[in-house]
Length: 143
Image 1 (tube, helix red, strand yellow):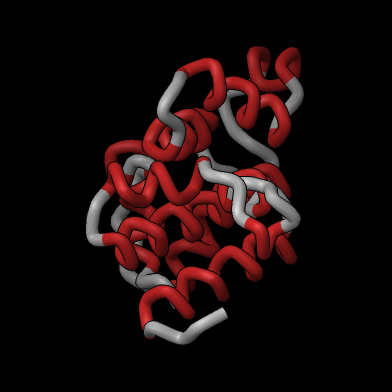
Image 2 (cartoon, rainbow, N blue to C red; image 1 turned 30 degrees about the vertical axis):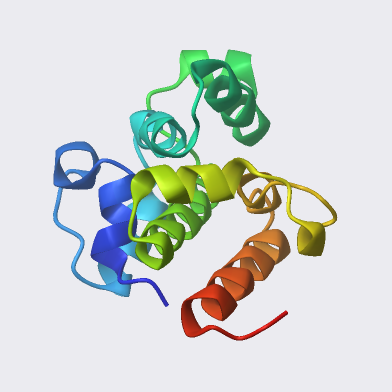
């Protein structure tokens, strides 16, 4: 499992979350209380090569009108944000490069029904599958 401080860093870290995340409990507390909506925007900006693609994914997590009128995400929207951040943090760790991770996250993958891993990560099961792929890449386990 990716260390919680790396996941928090993808979402903007202490400056956005309001406190340091040192444990899974800290991360869970931030998610349960509802993340600032800026955490979602920063998460997607970090992984998407274009603002248009980031905006499209953002509005798949939270409808546009809802996003515009709120300052915080609901717990379920926060969970989706954390899940995306976890997959992004894992990809960055595996590839040891934000640019290479961004490229991998955006490229359709045959083991994800030709969906990009970032889009697969919009669901819990898709995120698990993307993380399994990353684990296999990291440990050199063939598909």
